[in-house]
Image (cartoon, rainbow, N blue to C red; front, side, top):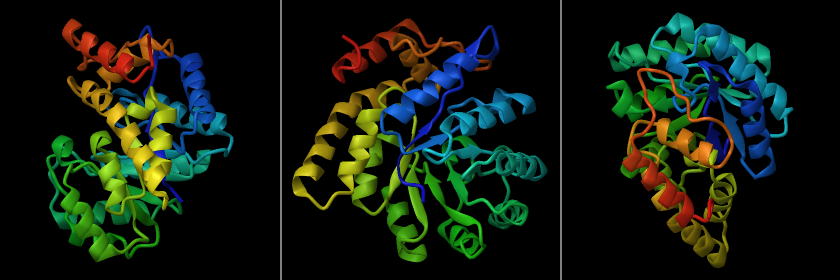
Length: 294
C-alpha cells in the first residue's frame, strides 16, 4: 500500500502566508519525478505552526493536485487525542489515502496511554494509520509490544520509524511480521533499512532530490545484483545531502535548498529561523556534489 519514496512535504510560505502557487508547483514536481507518495502537514511541513485552517488547506490542496495518481498520507497527529481525531476525520473527508500520526509529544504518556490514544483515533476513522515513532522529538518511545497490540486493531497499518535503531526494525519484523508496513524516517539509513526488510521511507531529502530518492528505493528492493549495486551507488551520492539537511533544525536547511533550486522561498516560521551562512555553504556543496546545482 505505502512503500518506496514518500516525501515529507515542506510548506512554502510568503509573507507568513501559505504560498499556494509554490506548493502546487512542488506537488507537480513530485508527480513528474517518481515520488511514490505525498505526506503533507508533517514535521517537515511545519505542522506545529500551522493553524487549523492552514493545516486543513495544505492537506486538501495536496489531495486535489495529486488527483489519485499517488497516495496522500496526511499528517494528522497531535498531543491532544481529540484534536488528532478531528484532523484525521477531516483528512478522511478530504480524500486522503492514509494518515501519519505522531506519538503525543510533551505529555509523556505511558505505553498504555499511547495504546489508548491510537485506539481512539482508530475507532474514529476507516483510513490506514501509520504510527510515527520519533523519540528524539517526542521524548517517548513506543515499544514493539505496544505496536504489536495496536496492530491487532483494524486500521493500524504500519510505522514511520525514526528511532535511528536498525535493531528495532529487526525486532518489529520478528514480532509483527511482513504485513506491518515499515517505513524509515531516517534518510541516511534508507538503503540499509530496506536491505533489512523495510519497504520505504518518509523522506526530507526527497523534497529536493525526488528522482534520486525514488530510484534508490526502487533498486534497493530489486532481486538483481546490478540494481542493488545501483541503489548503493545512489545512496552514496545522497549521503552528503542527507547530512547537510540536518545540520540545523529541519526543515530550515531543506527550505534553503528548495530556494536554491527555484522551488520556493526559504521563509520559515518562528520559533525556527533561517539557517546560518556556514550551513548555507554546506547545503550548496552537497547539492553540487549530487549534481543538483552547478
